[in-house]
Image 1: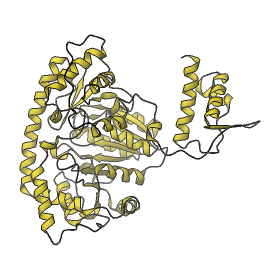
Image 2: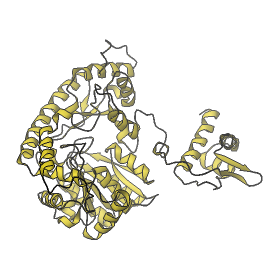
Image 3: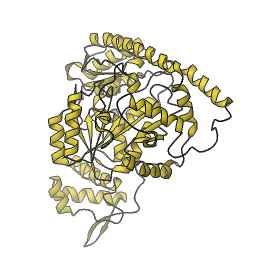
Amino acid sequence: MARGGRVEAVMGGIRERIAARTLQPGAKAPSIRALAAASGVAKSTVAEAYDRLAAEGVLQARRGSGFYVAGRAPPLALAELAPQLDRSIDPLWVSRQSLEAAPGALKPGCGWLPADWMPDEAVRRALRGLARSRQANLTDYSPPLGAPAMRQHLSLRLAAYGLEAPPGQVMLTESGVQALDLVCRFLLEPGDTVLVDDPCYFNFHALLRAHRVEVAGVPWTQGGPDLEQFEQLLTARRPRLYITNSGPQNPTGGTLSAVTAHRLLKLAERHDLLIVEDDVYADLETEASPRLAAFDGLERVVVIGSFSKTLSAAGRCGFVAARAEWVEGLIDLKVATSFGGGGLAADLTHAILADGAYRRYLAALRERLARARGETLARLRPLGLTPWIEPAAGIFLWMRLPDGLDAGAVAQHALAHGVVLAPGEAFSASRGWRDHLRFNAAQSGDRRIYEVLDVAMRSARGSPPMATPRPAG
């Protein structure tokens, strides 16, 4: 690396430590000698980096004493709490690409169903029913634990998976993301280590940045996490928490085997590991896969979930199911961060779930998704992409690009033509899976996606494109 690059790297490292609050305002920066030795660079490189940071006002030089962090702590910037990534593979940016995409954009990389796949009429019918009901709470706060009827429904729903969770151990949240955030606030301290699957849902990475914890990835296999690697990480890193999906795993579509689940829980008990099991895709399964919480009985496993993927991302309702002695602490955190919560979304969700039409909708949705997965595979294979597995249920296909192509580069080219892709590196704590893309089969019906993908792949490998595709939107 050239000298200029080494200076920039030292400067970037100091900025990251200030952003993460490991170097507080007024704190003394590492000595030039110590940082040079730790970074493997010359003392002159560190001296130049410090001089430039002082010129920018980031550090202050004190004669005979060293360099100190200037001013007040900057506002928390999540993008600064991790190694600087190309925006095409940064978890926060990938999410924003999908959320901020123009109405006509094509989004095979997003994580939700198209609006016309959702039960729009059932939502409208439930809204009309709530508007007519004198008992409906349309204006007041909800109790912190959440609407009793919805919690009772969730208790029965969890029992169908073999999990005994009385309504008093179920707390409603505004979303699945809020549920995970509250659990992390409850269980974690800055600096703790958290295990995630590699690959896993990329927003796990983004949220864990905000909690300022260390993240380690466990290789995911077709039957669950690699238990040999899992045990090695438990011994070497002593993690506090493991976060995983149940049901169709995001992004691979794989499922946990019963054998792996049992062995994993034994390891968790031996190493005093806590587990969060995200059950957001439960309703997309044709046959229920094993649940860690059902084997564990909520002793060291917390279940979270929501209905954003199957009902409505506008009227969001999530939940946490945890052991009894943790519920009071979780309630206090919910009150502290969102007060009583909104009951309207919970009442709306319960009205739809209690309607027999929801079960019929799910049956049709699963069949429709099976067709969409098959059609998407049939279109991707001629382009040279191959599936990691062919999932039995769910939204996602985890596809390997041919010739070791870089998925981030392909995604950048595709975005220029109005197509949002999800590159594999965004899902990986180890920055692996660079030749993979996640496809949402429900969002992959438009032929222009494959035209753009073909051009993007040719551009990424340096070959001239066959034709310029018509931009989406």
